[in-house]
Image (cartoon, rainbow, N blue to C red; front, side):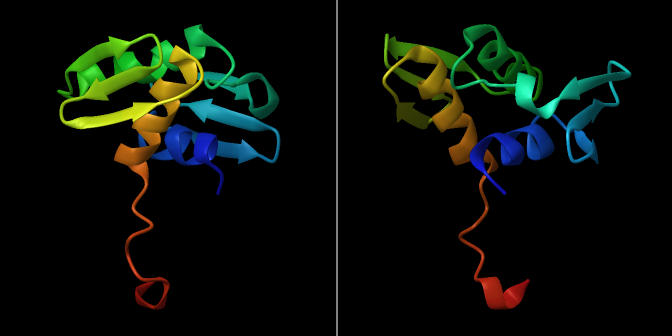
Length: 101
């Protein structure tokens, strides 16, 4: 799974309906995989921010290229990339050894 897919599944709670569509159960809508680009689109990145805030995280902008969710901070070339990187840090659990899975 790539970074955006991990965020879509683990933070936004979306399910992959088929190879080209996500399904958002909360809003009862389909989202084309190719159209959800949080690293490139600040509006998409803000969907992640809103979801994490609803889950209890505090969102802080440290600079135009650095954000934090509670004590998890990340940087990027743009604010959207920084948000995506921080969200990925929260969602990624690849620290679990592969042999355990």
